[in-house]
Amino acid sequence: MRIKVCLVSALSIITVLLLSGTTAAETLTLGEGLKIVTEKGRLVRIAAQDEEVAKDNALIARASLFPRVNASLNQTFLAHQPQAIFGNATIPTSQQDFLAYSINVQQTLYDFKRTASRYAAGRTRVDTQKLDTQKIRNLAAIEFALAYYDLLEAEHIATVAAIEVERLQSHLKDAKDLYTEGVITKNDLLQAEVRLSDAGQRLISARNFRAINASRINNALLRPLTAEVAAAEVDKLNVDYLETSLEKAWEIGLKERPEMKIAEETLKTLGLEEQAKKAEFYPELFVRGAYDYTENRYQVYEGNWAMILGVGVNLFSGGSTKAEVARVEHQKSKLREEKEKLVDDIKLEVQRNLLDTQSARQKIAVVKDALQQAEENLRINKTRYQEGVGTATEVLDAVTLLTVAETNHYRALYDLGRAEAAAMYSQGQKLAEAYK
Image (cartoon, rainbow, N blue to C red; front, side, top):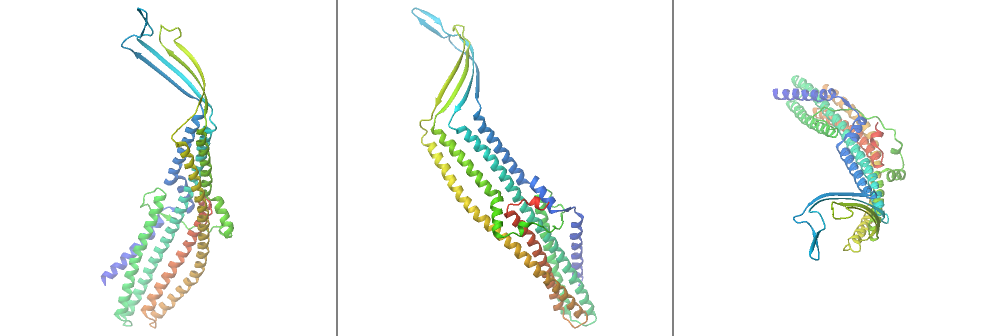
């Protein structure tokens, strides 16, 4: 009996720690968390670096539009002074040691838009990467929103478990009083103690489940995993596109989802790359200016200017250019197929999330009535038991039934929150703005 009393006391302490630890933490709203995640989250920061890399690649491609300037400087030391034979005499043609330098500038005049197409492709990749950053930002937002609703649900489930322990403690007290009076048998008392022990284990599991979800939130917010988190309830959303028809939701999703825009921009990039590759079949017109100086007192002019207007063409490359053009064509065909599949996937995702939203609302209406009935059922059976006309099993079953009803109520409530967030995400809406 002392062991049972110690167990009950330990469970009470756990409940107090659970509730007091949560309320001591600074309250976090979903909007505040989404702002942090979408601006400072790890995935967003990684995507921002990819965006900078894309900008650098565009600058590299743009460099070919400007003149290329090369310079060189060298000092030569010869073992023998260069000389030429004229009859029976030798005449020096160069100094034994001499300095030489040169500078040349070359500018492409026309290359059938090869360089321009590469630069345009680079700029399009920057736009594509910005869309990818937007996609990752919203992906991080939906993951955080789902984790936030999971935390809210876990907190209420833990509270329900703690309340169940309190109800069973109250019943155990009543059972002890009735046992002392000789109204009930030892079996009723043991049954109450076993149910209390089982409820205590569920409370511990609920507490662990809540701690895991709190760690998920801390991980997303770049905070220590063990930091206390208190999640504020989410206000009811008043968003029109959650009430829209399926056809309208499809239209919005296909228009707003960044994945669709990324596919379109990528197709545009591949078209520019194909144009650049095809330009390699044609010649390149260029102009080059140079100045060369070689220290040599035996020459009339040590320095000389040169101007060259030339044409360069790749006559044979082993078929690599043709193969690269074909590869781009195949990439475009693959991307078109992926885009068609993406359309089907988005429409399916939108439909599933809208159905989940409707289903969650219907469940809330159902469990609300069940919750009221379960509360009344417990009140009646507890009164009957205290008056000696009811059984312990009826009270314990009523406690369990009420716990199930309360659990179902909170699960349905936060299923709706998750479904609404997923519905907005699938239609391309920015969650950080929707929950601001």
